[in-house]
Image (cartoon, rainbow over all chains, first blue to last red; front, side, top):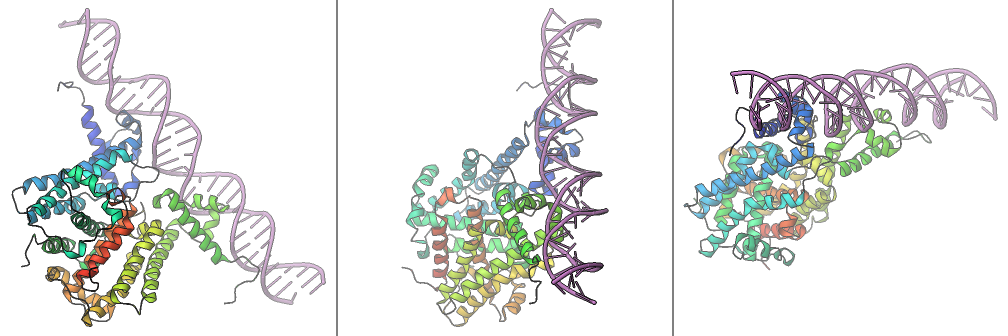
Length: 234
Length: 234
DNA sequence: TGTACATCAGTGAACGCGCGTTCACTGATGTAC
DNA sequence: TGTACATCAGTGAACGCGCGTTCACTGATGTAC
């Protein structure tokens, strides 16, 4: 807690570098990130950055870790805010936060889910747990909804392939309670749906087709929740 | 038809350049494409490429146009092959081709649906019609299935938002027959679902979660078709 | 209060590299007579 | 059949540029006595 007083605080600068790096990526794309560009924007020289990140790679890794945590945090906040609401409201809030965060931080979302940066690949042992994090809480809501009898799995999702089913146990352990196979299939379907819409929105492919991605996203989520009988048709 | 005989054929070289460019992108990512890299791989010098593509940008544009056409062609071929099959089989074949082509040509798929290449943006008036192309045929199948009474729109997709509904007319014209609003919503939902699963597969995010992306894809498509009553539960 | 020393963020020059692009050219091939 | 000319894909040198990274350094700040 005792940090050097008047003296410059290194943590601030490290954070500033990351902030400017994100701005640079917004301008020039994730692959357009350069140390010299960041330095110029900050009014310092490029070698100064080496005091904080020994290699460009380390900076990118830090940005990716931040992105994963920020997405998880956004979804967690939505879960907390609605923890006393209906299952439908909780799921709407959490998956709504997924899109909202992506739209507000498109570069960070691309850092997680987009094209890899040439010559760089994030260490998998670092990213895999981070990638799982935001979904554990969501799965808990589903399982709870099913156990209380509020959620009904529709017939069309009954027959999860065996090759997929063997991955359920690991998730059951992480979530803290077993997950029935059809529910697992239904949850991954939900992930695919929201992810597809978000990606099509971020790459500007869906706007010319439907015009209003936000409205369609709500419509899709509502349809999904209706099918699980967590939401009634209007 | 009368091309110079013994003389070198420029079209072959132009095609070879694109082929090598694709290989380079596979190796180094879409952003890692360089004229010098292509030239080196081909055993020629970089300036020679200028005889075929006056700028690097033109080469990339050519690659993108090729990618759009190849995806459309793959989906069209699937449609033709199954044109006398059931509606379910036809839709399975077309959306199956979407994933199949993406998995076999990940770089080209990223060129269409992925992160933009830094400093380059494809001319929209060129890409928009190309982007629509593969879906027109698919929509025709849906509309036909609905008009014959084979397809039933589930209740949860009834209320398409107004802001989205106004985009339907344009599609109705392209497809050649009016599209009911709930069917339109259902179709876009289907696009989002398959696109999400494909993107998660290409970026290696879904393998650690479900293990077998191909099996899950079929499961999801079947669930979708069952819900439309185009396929019965086993 | 004053002096000597340690710390360390940031500087500026330099490195080697690969990039897109230009330019005058070469040399093999095809064409006209 | 032989010669002169036109065509044009490809060459090799050169350009200016921005990149990541290294290195010895400076100079402000904090610390010890």
